[in-house]
Length: 151
Figure 1 (cartoon, helix red, strand yellow):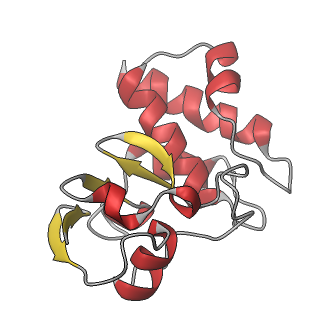
Figure 2 (cartoon, one colour):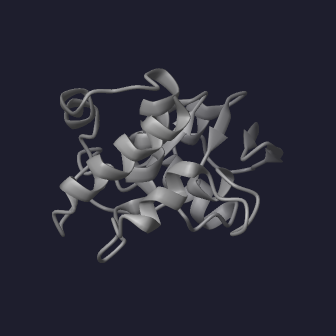
């Protein structure tokens, strides 16, 4: 099966019912995806499929055939080429334990792509991912800062 992962075409030979989380992490070697609840609730495993946030723990790899998949590893080419969102995430010290951050950042990235100037209420409604450390105020601040810089 073929899919595009972080702008690179990949071929993977794995049973189609394999959760994409495990296919991408274990078979394709992208460990930026995190396993959280395994039920599509927490959002730690969020990837972007054709730009849309998708929970990889409950999405079979066969569902990604012919799609464009982006993980946190694919948002920037290297640590010197971070997106404004990633820079603001660090400046606002959003990450505490950091476990949920790949999914949080990808979800925020998708929000800003679909709504470049979200209100605080729109951010709260969109950002459904769970954060055990409770850094929600800093998440909102980083998203708002990025939105303001981009407008």
